[in-house]
Length: 266
Image 1 (cartoon, rainbow, N blue to C red):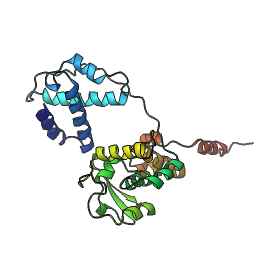
Image 2 (spheres, one colour):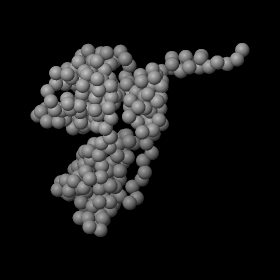
Image 3 (cartoon, helix red, strand yellow):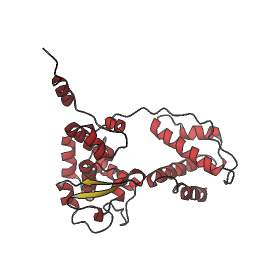
């Protein structure tokens, strides 16, 4: 079955961005391992049992469902290697919208003060520039100058950003090539940046409830609070202001100040 998943991954790379391919393939391999006869011979009921596990987060269930449905649409196509699709009646998963959950400025100061190499640079890029893990993975030293940074984001979209002085000071002496490297020296994948970055935060620094994306949440919240929705949307590189509004958790003190500033007569 591993060969079939590899074949599907090659097909998926022509349609999806690398981070999605990586996630889907990882989930498919996990399912193939836990299913009694693997993905090549499973039935609807076995998929239900493997995906809709009690205690599993709704967002994770939804990802499993999406990955396996797309796999079987390819595998059970007219020219596909399988002649059945057990996903036709998989229940939909209701995923509640998550409120942004930024770390505090005090936590960020603590993280940057204690983080080791190479993690401190990753955290600076997430909190100081709002970079996602996939964007940190794609970033090369040649993409950064003292004034600007070229970012390759979701869907391969390229954007230019200003560079904070602290970030430039941290990366200017890096050698050419990837900013984030795996333990063997090659470019770190998005998953590698996420998993290793989270492990350093949670295990080495003892911050059990902190993960990489919460640093980006901090950046979005601070930009929104200081400069408003339009600037935050541009800097977070969101296509829709609705997404920015979900990221930007305005502090209660800022809300109170806004209410107090309403020019009511009398």
